[in-house]
Image (cartoon, rainbow, N blue to C red; front, side):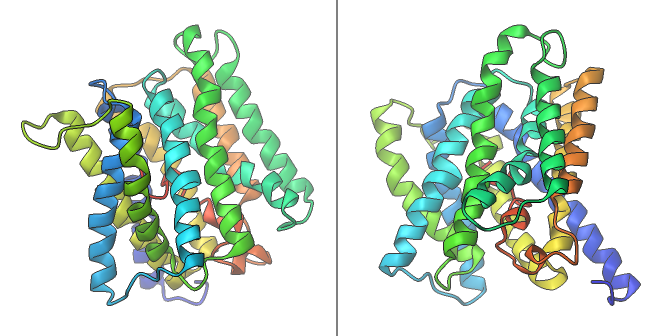
Amino acid sequence: MAAAAPRTRLWLTGLLVVLGAGWGITQPLAKIAVSTGYGHFGLIFWQFVVGVVVLGAVTLVRGKRLPCGPKQLRLYVIIAVIGTLLPNSASFAAIVHLPSGITSILLSLVPMLAFPIALALGLDRFSLKRIAGLSFGLGGVALIVLPGSALPDAAMLVWVPVALFAPLFYALEGNVVAKWGTYGVDAVQVLLGASLVGVVLALPFTLLSGQWIDPRPPWGAADAALVASATIHGIVYSCYVWLVGRAGPVFAAQVSYLVTGFGLFWAMLILGERYSGPVWAATALMMVGLFLVTPRANSSLASKPDAPHSKAAAPPPPAAGQ
């Protein structure tokens, strides 16, 4: 990236901004999707379906097939469960009660939570700088949950731990991939496989819970938001994978800052949300935390596209989700 021509750097940076804006808008769209009372299993099922359509088309255009050996199928199941079913269930449950901007801020914890998991799995070494980054992230959470601070209603406090399950599972997902690999399957194929498996896994939960969403018209804002969110995620993630290969994981990982910033911007623009001083202070702490845990160009992790911290650059972007 350093040796790239200024014009090349400019348009790659522009693409990075577009990706951040795309992923950032998925949180307000998720808020709209739950606004009519749709249950999380129904929403997740249709996310998987849209993911299959979008990522399947991308895979066909790339002229690739989907490997379906035993190891790959096990990988698809794991990614579907810890990358979408569990975190998106938590996200959808929490975002009903929390402002969209707050959930965007909390999702920026992914790379910070990835670090202690990486330590536990033997994927990283102890680092005071990254411990400091985690501390800043936790400080941001503290500002959000302190009584009379960032939350407009104290009753929302109980939903913050629920929302934190999402970044925790995304951090776990990235480390699982970094630890055991993808058995020769690239990132887009993994997401397609996870989406296909997810359709099968989510359908019985959707039906048994009574959360089936009828796909027939008339369609409302919630339906449009669901389809738009899942479609945007599939397209943006595919572009992100290309960007990692073109500009490197360190450059691409900077999208994390943009996702959080755009998440707040879109929530203000689309949902009319407004935030108090502690929310902006929490955002600043999260940005500092992100800076400290994001690998630099000379980091040994920076050369690994599936390293836990660089993997977290696709956070708000669950495996097939919002």
